[in-house]
Image 1 (cartoon, one colour):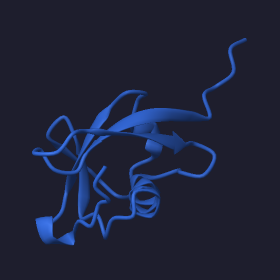
Image 2 (cartoon, helix red, strand yellow):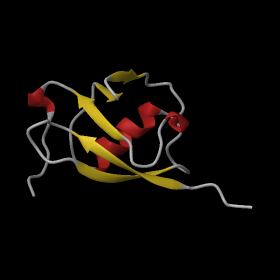
Image 3 (cartoon, rainbow, N blue to C red):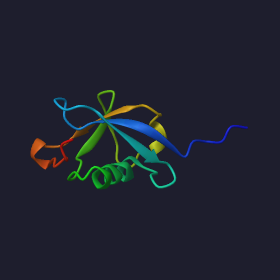
Image 4 (cartoon, rainbow, N blue to C red):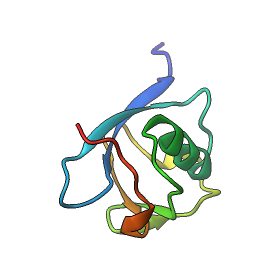
Length: 88
C-alpha cells in the first residue's frame, strides 16, 4: 500500500503584483487552516494573515488542512500595510 503524504507544496499569492511563492506544508505539524496561517507567518516572516482563500472562496480557520491538495494556490487576504515580506 502507498504511504500517505506527510507534506505537500502550496503556492502562496501574497499580492497579485508580486510573483507566487512555493511553500511546503508539513502535515505532521499543521492540522487546520489557522495553524497553516501561523506557519506561513513564521516561515515567510510576514505579519498576521487575515484569511486565506482557495479558488475565490474563504477557508475557515477551523477547517481541517485536508481540504487542501498538493499544488493548490492560496490567496492571502490582509491589508497591504500588514505585509513585511523579504524581497528576493
